[in-house]
Length: 475
Image 1 (cartoon, helix red, strand yellow):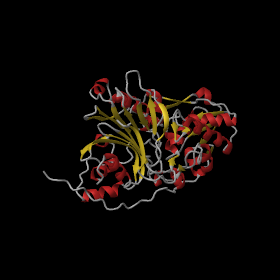
Image 2 (cartoon, rainbow, N blue to C red):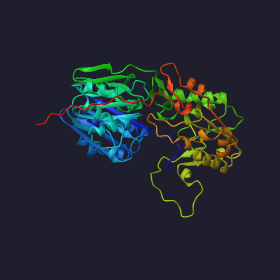
Image 3 (cartoon, rainbow, N blue to C red):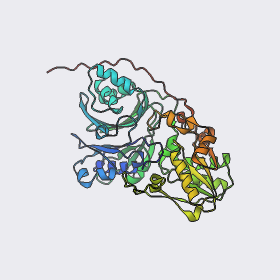
Image 4 (tube, rainbow, N blue to C red):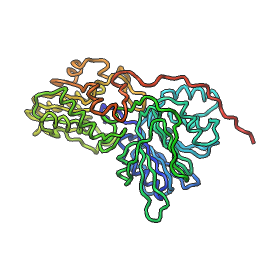
């Protein structure tokens, strides 16, 4: 059963100079599992060759002890995926690994390229053969076809030709690369594990979120900057800017929903942002009630803030079953709202006779919210007042988030009062756009992309220059 939620994009991790790099990559992906549950992969290097393993499913199921024992190396990159461009299939699992005139290269991508289809069409007309239908493969072809002689220069050349959101980790047999797009849509952090006795150098690590560092014992150093290419190799760590930074457009939904509360994202604590969202929501949309109840797990941190600001006690009136698999057998006699009941169950003793403030991070189509409100009323609640810790979502995202089309977004087609009536709540209120930006520190360390709430996108659908293929010498 899938909740009516936006789906997380992807998570990436990279490890340089560690005797068990493949195991650290595995642990890092485990911490980033919330960012994608469809497939996962790791590519490792022993200094001479690249070794890849990719599969459909969850990280812990894919990377058994036996699998990891065959991937021994001191460099590794990893990826956990939810498809935002390209089908959900093993063919599109990452990292992508290729052999070209630039040598063996592997790449893992978090984000979405808005001009990928146009580039792909041009390259196919010029003879390129694509193995996947993922937008990430476009970058691989651009690197291989670049006229630049070195891999770092070819990477920079390729990235100047693409438009959209990308946080990338790449590797050759002896180097790791980390890159963010010039607008900084998606997060990418850099950390360090101090060298142990007998080891020659510190381990340098990269990950989509800092919660991955906590699990592997790394210390967060800084974010990879927008437009920056960081190279870690035998010579040490070097940095250059392949493109000037544009007006920053970091995805605010990372703080509203996607990232784990224990992460630092865009230089800011996610926990702090979410509690602020709840506090601001309580100021903007107060209600006389007996209990604040979060929709687990997405509404928990905002509900803590709402409760603290309003003085209304927080109660976990909905319990989530974390062990629901992808398939289930439904009883022959249909149970109403069976899918939601598989994951959530109300605590009648906390809800019966109460005026409930129900907190969630968003409403997408409205179908799940409607079922949850009905479930809480069925448990005896006297009133149900729904509060959402972000503004109404009126536009789809093109920067690495799997969102429905505009016609499927309930807030793009109904007023707040019509949505309230549809979900069956006694009242409904969303956080304002300015309240959300204030709660997340807009303008302090970054400025945010809020296109899904405003319909104003920070990029143009650009027409790239004609790409000339590199002449291949014949034997």
